Length: 178
Image (tube, rainbow, N blue to C red; front, side, top):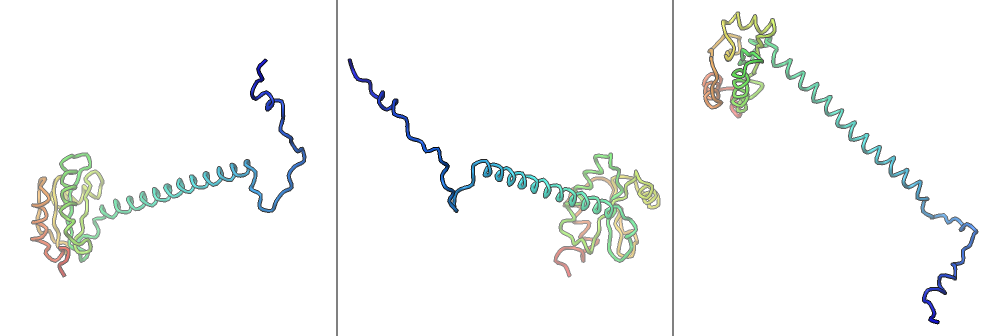
C-alpha cells in the first residue's frame, strides 16, 4: 500500500500555548480599536467638509443678497458718482440680454467711478423711477455725478457699442484712467 503524502502532517496538530502573551509596551492596538478610530476620523472629515460647504453657501447667499440690494438702491444716483440705470423687467428676455451686455461692457470701467443700478419695474420704487424719467423697459439711463441725465439708450445693444457709449460719456471712469 502506498503511503499518502500529507497524512502525517494532518495528524500533527500545531502546539498551542493557551497562556496569553505578555503585553509589551509597544504592542499595536487591537484591530477593533483601530477600526473605530478610523471610522471616527472619517466621520470627522466628512462633517468638516459638510460644515465648510455650508459656511461657504451661507457666505455666498449673504453676499449675493447684499449685491442684489445694492444694485437696486437708486438713492445713490447723484451722490458724487456717475451712474448707469437699467429700467428692467425681470420677466423680459430682452431686458436680461441687455443686462448681460451692459455688465460685460462695464468690465473695462472702475466700479468706484461708475455705478450700475437696476430700476426693477415690478417694484414700486423701480416703477416710480421709470415713470419719473419716462422710460420703458429695455432702457439704459446715463446720469452724471450730480444726478443729471446725460442720455437715454433704448433697446438691446451689443457690448462693444455700449462700451463705446460709456467711454464717450464717462472717460474718467475707464480702468487705468486717473
